[in-house]
Amino acid sequence: MDTVDCIIAGAGVIGLAIARETARMGLETIIVEAADAIGTETSSRNSEVIHAGIYYPQGSLKAQLCVSGRQKLYAYAQDRGVPHKRCGKLIVATQDNQEAALAAIVQRAQACGVDDLRMLSAAEAQAMEPSLSCTSAILSPSTGIVDSHALMLAYLGEAEERGAFLSLNTKIVSGQIRPGEIRLQTHDATSGSDYEISARHFINAAGLSANAIARKLEGLDPKFVPPLHYARGSYFSVTGRPAFSRLIYPVPEPGGLGVHLTLDLNGSMRFGPDVEWIDEIDYRVNPARADHFYGEIRKYWRDLADGSLQPTYSGIRPKLSGPGEPAADFVIQGPDVHGVQGLINLFGIESPGLTSSLAIAELTVSTLKSS
Picture 1 (cartoon, rainbow, N blue to C red):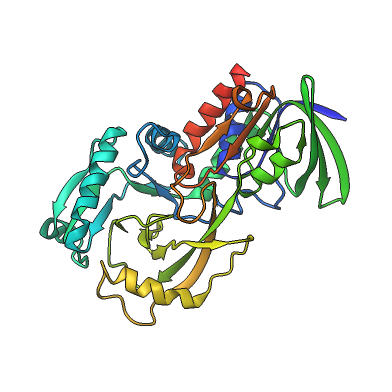
Picture 2 (tube, rainbow, N blue to C red):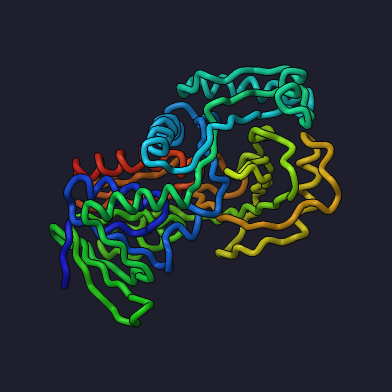
């Protein structure tokens, strides 16, 4: 049986950012990933937005890690040549009764350290974006977009430069918590072989699978594994010349940020995600959901043509709160909570996880050092 310093479950943006940190610490690190490539789930099925840190409750991990993570991510992308753009965002009110909601967003954001927002009149917003329809708006100049796959490759490259090893097609079947070690039984889908590996530290950053993996660990009290809810978000695209140069967001809706307009680094427009609660992982996009999209998008872009929306892709948020419940915070759970030395579980890492990835990695490793 092989023994290493650290095993990380999950080769998404969070697992890879953490692997970069543990490898930089000099820990012998193995990243185990059940899929045949990195970042095939939440990390690549999102809007690729660098969030400013606007929407989250003061004092929450989401607020703290998004604000610090955004600053770290811009600096990292610039330093490592990761494609990105600080394009800015408008959050728009489309009816008068949403004005108070915009004011509340500004107040919450300022309390969390986002100090560059600016309220705009309808005329000021439309001067920036002539195709926009709104009654007022908030300008967030520090919102941007990033190539998420290039970012993950950069994290992986740094980790591997320091000796980390990536094992794809490797599923964690079970695990046992023992004094001074955590043993994992894994199955290699490529060879069909089973392997056992031991580590002093195990970091569970498996996203949609994190809760299930935690339940497989003998010696971890099940009460420390929260229930998981799947919220699918579908995206639709529009071809042709983009009508906007900034991201356009409506006032947030329960479970998500509403059907917003994002741009990729080529300027192509895509809309989404919506919120659809599902019982199992299923990435199929129902073309009929476009009917809802047309109505939502036309609240701020009246010129959207009939028949122009095309289904593109979907993502699934690993939510710790279900329909109608208050949004849950990130959970980065170490020995101070569950009492197991060397174990850190990350649960409910949804948006703004991509933006926060470097900050999440630093917090996780600081928790590791103290365990």
